[in-house]
Length: 112
Image 1 (tube, rainbow, N blue to C red):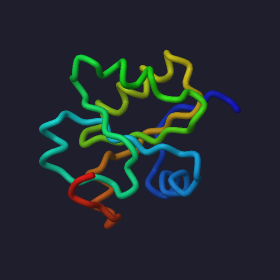
Image 2: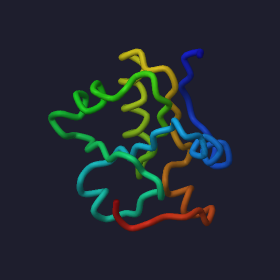
Image 3: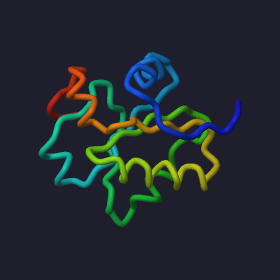
Image 4: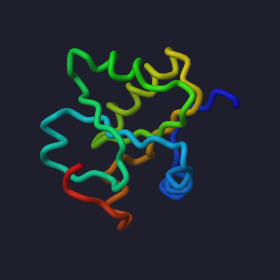
């Protein structure tokens, strides 16, 4: 498999979510997570700004496919860059963040 990193629009993000080996990760600050919704099927929440933020990423299985999202694009983008440096294989970010997801009428839920 080629190293694949970048953004996916909502339709392509949803297609990747359907794959059984895909892990969906919410990358946000604790305060953001407490205030805002999440995408159903979220497998993991990694706290942006936590002292162990990078360690939490490093301990993930590098052979799996990852989809990332955040409230604002910069947090998941930053996590994706770390994953690229750590030799992950497939990491994609939701273009437009969860804000665009909700405005498109996609399903959300309040908490994990």
